[in-house]
Image 1: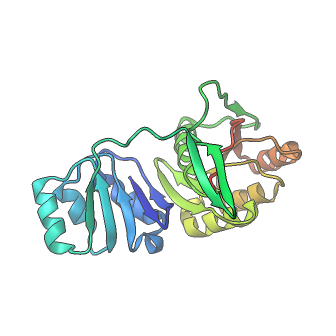
Image 2: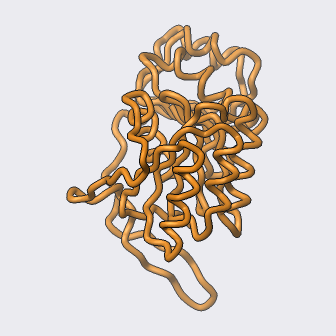
Image 3: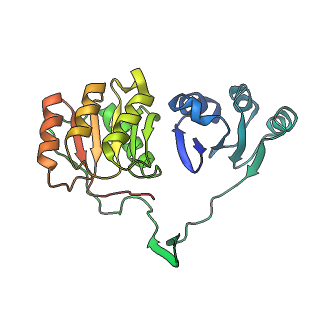
Length: 243
């Protein structure tokens, strides 16, 4: 499940059902979720509609809606639009951005290439739980506007920072949104840390593991900060800028 506001994810969670995923996705940023869009990859049922409570939602996108859920939504949420999308279309290989006097054309980011290799560069190896959370966070950060930082616990985001001019402020924003949930969370960064300061802020907030592309001239300094704080760090060798 993804909750989106102004084309930017504000809550992402995985669970066995939309009703189970919704509270975790909402907790990531309940303020931004107001008036947002919810997209799920399973049919919407009555349990999910009940889980929404009184939250104002503009649009719900799902493969299908049960008759009971559709009745509840149309009667109780007259301004909520329901979009049935059984299968997302295959993404076009190119994407376009308008610029003054022309267009910027670039290849669409469709995730890590098949031969991408992750490397643990810290002294401490990730635990099984940390690795699962890092894998989730790395997929999530791909869809957040650069500079993108995602904090996650388990299979849910707890704080995000993106669309900012520098990565340090993105970390600070993600940590602030996470609050106490930053303790023991993992962090994903869509591009390398140009300085160790962002990792230092994350460590002070209680983050336990970091995944990032690497490739900075100061990678070693960043790794040293992670080691000093007892963090585990993975370098992916792949960047995921989204502008």
